[in-house]
Image (tube, rainbow, N blue to C red; front, top):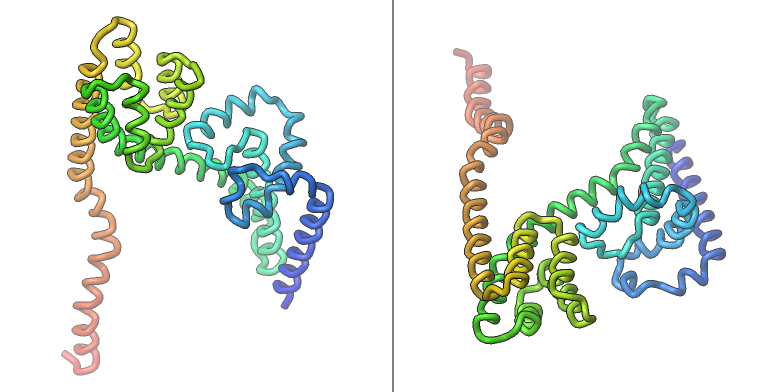
Length: 288
């Protein structure tokens, strides 16, 4: 009963705080970003609170925040179009929630008094861990989609199209992947008058992958020396396909080693229990 009362009190306080934010920031809530229209309900609920905390975070060292978060948000794709002060606000909200949960556990279930501090620190770093996982997943998707997109780009260039038209074909015909989104953004930069070298350098900077940096460097070098673009694309496509095959071979060779731990500690004990327990019970009941 005491735990239920504490939980209801916390929910009532959170609802009151949210209602006050809604009254204060109704104008800001109505002006929803286009990227927020397809977002989850939880994001829309916390959006006003994040904006208030972000306004207070503006007083902090902006250069340090930009160095810490800006590149990581860009590499992750940043689907919510967050700026560093907003991401810091999300970390602060998660830390506050962690402290509240720690207090509830301490008061109701007699956990250690340091539990609010532990959960608060864990809540603060939880968005950063999630961001790192998003970056790893996105880089894997970029790596898997790179050979096919490069093949399609190579075929388009060798068929007689210029680089911009070939890139447009890749964006139109290619599968929906993060790489296609990045190529679409590069295509928009080219249409706005950005030079090919700068657009390729921006692609490499946004993805932060060795394979894409090698690809863009080869195209920049071919453009600088006046070498045939189709030949450079064909060479890079063959290299990327070989790297993908080698990585798949490496993963297949590592699979037995990775399976050793679950086999020893989960599967073998379960098999032994299923086989030996009936025999042991039979000996105990019937005697030797």
